[in-house]
Length: 245
Image (cartoon, rainbow, N blue to C red; front, top):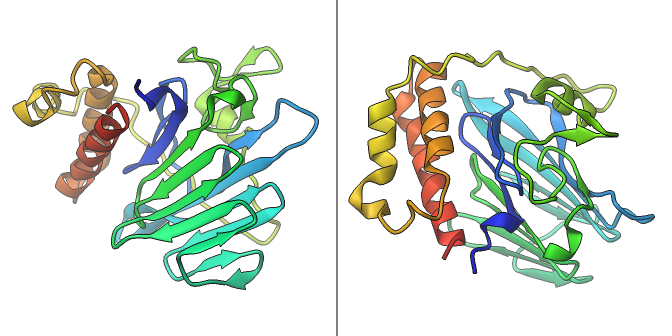
């Protein structure tokens, strides 16, 4: 059984894949809600994320997770749990936080797993009991790709971003324009990358076409360090391969 349809990811040059498999790009260093539990009377979790720019390359600068009364704040310099700086591993109030050399893992008994690679990539996996009960940039978890619906209306990516922006009054952020033109990317190179032998077992499990478009967008939107940005999308492809078992 593939877990892919329960995983929302964001990585690299402002790329997102919703729980329902919709790929989009959103250039923003603002604080956004990735996913919250919004279907019932009680919001048991909410996960927010902010990107920053380091040497003109997008990275994830902070993640805040409210998990049934506990608050986890992750950044490159610290892990803060309920307003206290903590060392890892930590197990408390139904939340487990672990660290490896390359990632931080957060797991909540609520049915949530999150993995941050301490750089550009965040994966969030939800228990299927939350289907049709989520809001945020990760989508509504209803199994239908390509739909950003709110109150019955279809939203554009820009409107979606506005809806789930949660900046404080003193915060500033930027929303860089990303080239909407995909033709400047090398389609053959990108397709070949994801259909090469090392990935042969993944091709039928992953959305190669969407990854090809993401790869082309990377080539269009990165003048200087195309190679390192492409590496991030290829890394994401391999991570999703692992999720697909």
